[in-house]
Structures are given as structure tokens and as C-alpha cells.
Image 1 (cartoon, rainbow, N blue to C red):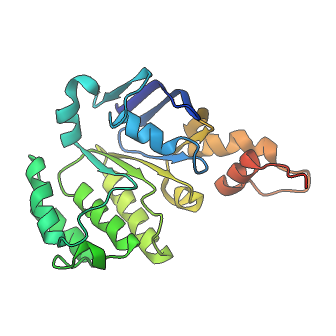
Image 2 (cartoon, one colour; image 1 turned 120 degrees about the horizontal axis):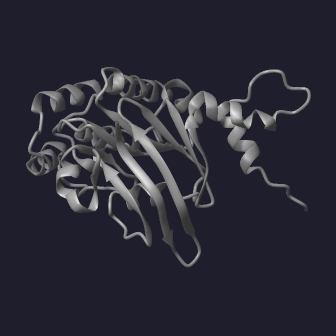
Length: 248
């Protein structure tokens, strides 16, 4: 079963186009969406959540048309997107009190657990949180309403290595028993080496390759140089695919 199916998603802007992107997120898997800044990762995530209108394409969540069942689908979806901010003078506990009203299956025990895990103080104001702590707070909210599909935009960006490893471990625990899946965009490919089941690679608005991680890595081994014996990492694959020749 696929929790998410994206088919020929397209969006045109004056200076950028997303072109017929298709991929699936199977139940019980972590899918990494990779590409350089400006490749179209955030556009894809916003488009599939109907935060921006698309020119073409369809999105299915939980085997239903997303547009026809948007409220119900969003109840079962945990989302963290970049650029989301709160009133800086508000305390965490006040923001949570408003947020949880939107979710029918809010789990207060889970929320309190993640507050402790992320060392988040409920009485702190947003302005007192570092960028990394704000990300952790958003993730705590996303994990606290019995969601089955998690969509994260650069969730580990701004976190220190220890916090990133903690978050990756949480991701692995989320999908461990099946029934839940994660789609997250990132340019930190080392995080995907640790947890991703499959990779979706976007370049200049187009899908380059979507495949299980081993198949994906094997596919790009043609980029190896004659003197290289070790398999190329995701980072090296991406660097070589995006590499440019500069002539000064």
C-alpha cells in the first residue's frame, strides 16, 4: 500500500518549472527527497499539500484523492515546512493550546514525551528558541496527533550532529512497526545514508531518478572514476551530478 502517490506534478513560474514529477511513498518506509537548493523540493512538498495550486498532476493520500478529501487527509498527516514561524512573544504552551484544537486525535502524552526528549521548555517564548529548537518544536507538534504520513522539509537543517542523530533514530522508530511513512527533503545526504529506504532525486524541477536506495546508488556508479574502487556515496553522486565547469 502507498500512503502517498504523486503523478506528473507540474507547476510553472516565470523563472522555474516543476515538470511532471511522479513518485510513491510506500507504507512503512522513509523516502528521501534530494536536490540542491532551488531544485524544486519545497515546491513539490507545498504542491502536494495544496499550499500552492498546480498546473497539472494528481496527488493521492491513503488511497484517496487528496483534493477531494483534503481535511481528512491532513488529520493523518504530520507536516514541518521551512519558513513557518510563530509570534515571537508567545510561549510554546500557548501556541500548542491553539494548535491541538485542530486535531481530532491529539495525543497529549506523546506531546509531553517529545517535549522532554527535545529538552523544550513550555514556558519559553519563541524568540528565546534557537533555529534548531524551533525545528524540534515543530517536529514535536507533528508527532503528537496520531499521523500516519509525515512530510518534512529539511528537518535536520540547523541541528547539531547529536540532535540530528536523535532525530534520525526517531524517524526509524516511527516506521519500525509499519503503518507509517516519512517523506523528507534534505541536502544532508549523510542522514539518508543512515535511514532512507528510497531516494527521489530532483534536478532543476525534473525527476532524475526515484528508486530504492541500493538500486539508486548502483544506478549512478557509472560516475565513478577509473581509479576509484569504493562505491560512490549519495553525497558524491549528487556533487558529480550537479558539478559545473567554471572557466575564468
